[in-house]
Length: 262
Image (tube, rainbow, N blue to C red):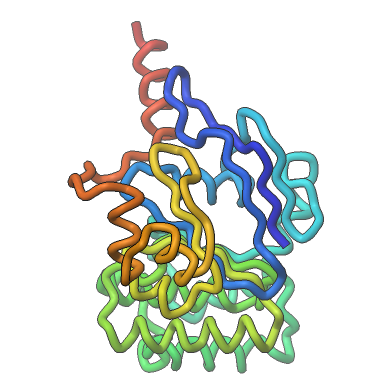
């Protein structure tokens, strides 16, 4: 369902993603893990047409991501790290707009919206403007919105960041069941290693833009002679504290703006 071959992304002299290759099977839950600044979000942005690769090939649902971006966008849903909701609309209106844009059948729209808003415990606040929501509520709404059109591939970039344990578990239960029911492929990033251990069929670990390991939890533990995913992860990436991830795309645009002002 997802094919990545020799993928590289450079911003001036900085290589954010360095010649990585992997594939994800239909119906698989696949975790892309790594420290801050490893290249996870840049990889997802290339897969979802937001960034153009410097080199390499990308295919999603057998569609070339670079050659047919409009075609590939119809095949996936995404929940970004950063908020993308319309704060001047209600939760229900945000969901409804997304459903119209992605062609959700009118006969199913109301049922799906109700089901998802109840799942993330926002049904009672469906008529409230999003600008009145807390950060956690907005996150839950974005996850519900990303699932609305039952995409063939769902990208989740730190989907449960800031959510409490109960809500995180409910969301993963729903994602798991939807993936099985709809044969949906899920690629996700997370810093909660237990989420990867509990939900991913396979895990890829990326660091400094390079893919350094890939396999099941059992295979990663065997590879590193460790007893847990956390130990395996630290063995592969080291234990030093990393700076919070900076989007190299935004950094490079800032550099170019500064140059143009000279």
